[in-house]
Length: 216
Image (cartoon, rainbow, N blue to C red; front, side):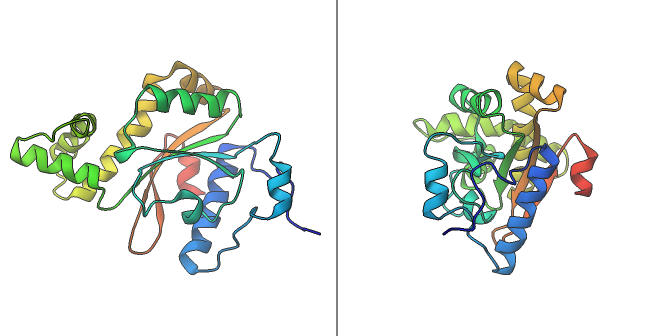
C-alpha cells in the first residue's frame, strides 16, 4: 500500500508556504536528492476526479526548463503554462485566471532562465534593427521593452535582460488582469518572479512585492 499523501493532504495553503515547498524541491534537485513525489498509482487515482495544485508556474518553453523536474514535483502539484520568453497573451491570462479563480491556487511563479533564446533573439534585433519573420516577430516585439529597459538600467548581458523580462512579466500579470489583481489584493494568491540558472540548477527569486518572500 502506498504511503504517499492524498491529493489534498499536506498541500501548501498560503503563497509563502507554496514558495517554501518549491524552494525545498529545488534544493533537492540541486543536490541530487530528489524524491520524485506524487508519482505513484495511488496519487494518479486520487487526482482522477479533481485537482488542487499549490502553484502555477508560468515559464519559458525552453526544453531545459521543465518545472516539475526543477522543483521535484509530481502529479497534481503544479499548474504549468509555458510560452517562449514568458510572453503573455489572452490565452495565458485566461489560463492563469482559471488556476486562481477556479482551482484557488495560492502562488504564481513567473520563471525565466539564463541564455533564453527568445530574449537573445530580441537583443539581437535591437542591435541589428532587423526583426524576425512570421509569428516570431510577435514574440520579439513583446520582449523588446524588457531589453530596452535593461539597457537603460546599465545591463550589458542577455541575462540582465532575462531578469528584467521576468520582472516585467510578473508585474504585467497584475496590470492586465483585474481578476488576478483582486485575488492578490485579498491575499488569496501572490505573484513572484524567479530565474533559473542552467549551470547549477538554482531557481533564484528576482521579483516580489512582499518582503516575506525574500526572507523565506
